[in-house]
Image 1 (tube, rainbow over the protein chains, first blue to last red):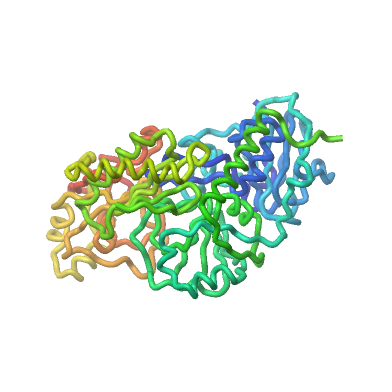
Image 2: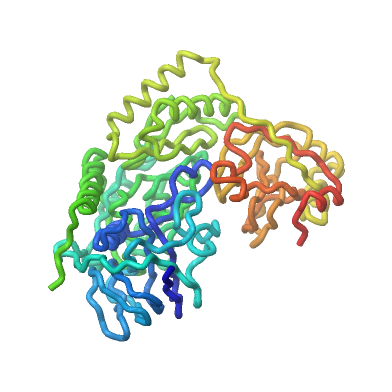
Length: 316
Length: 230
């Protein structure tokens, strides 16, 4: 088995795949790649299984060395990625040789980059997934983020394709973002004025953001309900705590909770939100469930089709 | 019973609007019926107090199909008002002692009870598992006798030892792993509440619908059973 040896782990670099499902009722969080668009592209470029594990690198300061030849793909945030000190193309595959050093320096656009390897990173599967949920000490090598001197195994593979993502599929993570929301049943508990404020105001991403949730700041959305009986929480649920500042619950959210919720951000928009850092401006719009389901089906079909007949464009 | 679309791939089944021990066996029966009828399209189910969150695969079926299918299952259940499902009954040993039950003496004082009476009240009845959450294997049990119910600490402890047994309002629970927590700690159990070595689907000792009874043990038994001392 070949290894990637971590030199500098960075702010927070974690092994992530499609997430952990089927254990919510035991209290296990979903976990999984925060930005599914970038994550799927990383695996698609390499013709990996769509659920293969990638390294999710938050904001850079990451450095590691390969000990055998292989092919990698880099997608997601532009963290000024370099191989042996030379700047490399994002949203693209790259052949690497034994001894090559990869580095992600600092964020230039977006927060989270995905580093995939041909065949996927080979860490143990825990409860059906390789994803790290730090709070639960599950996944990855030891339940935590990568550390210096960690060794990540990969399968030797010399036949991976060389490809890049066509420019029209590459998002600008600094663009304005409107989050589509499916109104939940507790929507009825919010006054007309509150709902109007929610959809007509701009909210700023606060500095209280992590893999569990994104706290936003802006005009307070109030509800007379201070809490509900704890119930299961879906991805993207927008909790409204006492201070009226919405919290969007992300991949590492707890499975149940009792704050009132005005609705649920779509999974595709949760991915977009996960690339926004403190200070970014977002707004909300209500959408209907049929449209939102169709959007997600199109997304999934696109990547399933790509994994059968490879997409992306050949590198010149 | 009521159905609500809550997200692009989840529908909430509401079975009642108040927390009630007798609702749980009914909820577990509904959980089993949904699983049996719709297992193919379900991603997961989360039972919790009065609701069941059904997460499904939107690439297999859409929300309209799911609402119809759930309505059919629930109609069948409603025509069988006696249908309910019992979980397993689990006895959990607890060493009740101020050495590990940081709040035991204070709570007894506050409630004008002797420590012995407090222990008898806590261990003298079966509890229902209402929900799992907070951390893997953390089961919310209830209801505790009103005479020993107590609100959470206003500022939580930064670390509560694994196995700690606590009371918060009408509920009691065992902390599976070391975590921050505001519950009133009255003792500690050597029982592992979450153990991946038992196998993926047996890792969490308790499931919603199980019944729990606490059994007071001595320090020596606690240690013998592998209990965790600081």
